[in-house]
Length: 266
Ligand SMILES: Nc1ncnc2c1ncn2[C@@H]1O[C@H](COP(=O)(O)OP(=O)(O)OP(=O)(O)O)[C@@H](O)[C@H]1O
Ligand SMILES: [Mg+2]
Image (cartoon, rainbow, N blue to C red; front, side):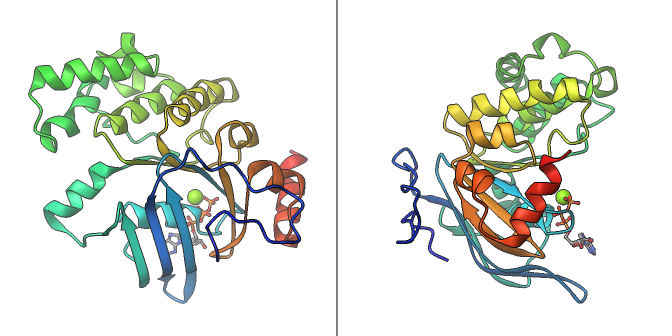
């Protein structure tokens, strides 16, 4: 697939303005992944440029989480190549730890360390991987916790926080590693409705500040406001790629039309 941003000749939409985007940062070429006989990622071609916000959307089981996990090397791939900032994903060892620092990830289920305070959750990685002193790590952690609006929760344990607060701490914890790209896998889908926006607001702010983001979400409001591009996945394939407006108003494939009619009626 051509990712250069040029619209096909029969497309009525003008090409999206991508002048704010930089060089390719995440590149997947010919990526294949199997779970036994199940071909979960099928010849995936995808390039995410520096500063780009990509929303990944698609039915359950289509491979969205596997895609994120492959980019963070939490899953191995069986074919093709993934590059981060020009470097192929390392298999293991110190380089892998460095890659993990470059690629931040926030999951659906809250994944903070339950037995550590909020402050310790945020300072642990910078101290261990980036080699910061306790006081430097804490100084930065307070700034990040302030930025996501939970500075006053620093001494608490995760279980003492609401789901929305926990997700914002998870975002701060990822940011503390100074990632080049942030992956979000349905970060609001386990939240009570009144907490969804406080997390989406933080993500939107990050997007505005130029963070490169890959976001699996069905939150169309976020996609409309923050995404440069939407990728629709089905059965392990990228079926459609468009700007949010194009995708939500003029889906081309039957799979996307069917999917949108279901989520829009909810
Ligand atoms: N560790 C695993 N072992 C075997 N099969 C798996 C494993 N992880 C995922 N799968 C299967 O791979 C397919 C893709 O799963 P994945 O979690 O990537 O989908 P998804 O698009 O994220 O779905 P959802 O919207 O429900 O989160 C599914 O059929 C799933 O059952
Ligand atoms: Mg998933």
